[in-house]
Length: 161
Image 1 (tube, one colour):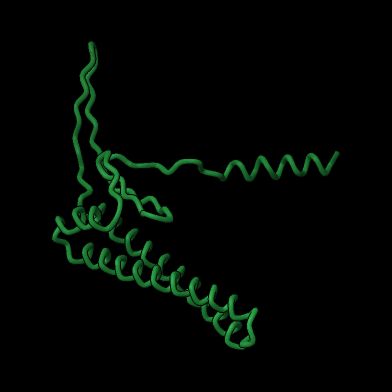
Image 2 (image 1 turned 180 degrees about the vertical axis):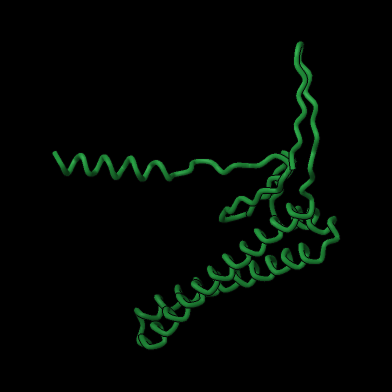
């Protein structure tokens, strides 16, 4: 009985911290990390891929935003090349294990694994740069707004900053 109670209690506590959806604040750019492609949601539009990101970031004229985007691109490409070459080296190494040159096979397996890890690292660093570009964009274009609402017998004024 106590084990079941403990399991239920732990399960309820874990569910409290699980978030199913990402909040998309109105009027701000939001980055959603995906395996491929990354997405940016801005003004009810979804932007995917470097060509669409370039349109968003280059029109700002802000060198910090553009530099973060360019770092994202270079890290993303480096990560993809390293991951692909690591996978190829790993497959060739596994193939060499069945032959007479086992030392070369293990060397290729090890180097392929390291290259794949490095590729994943560069991909994550690239996503971090894209997130920095989104944050810089939001800081530059965050505007305060004043709204007036009228009802039958009421009026309201909202100042969003």
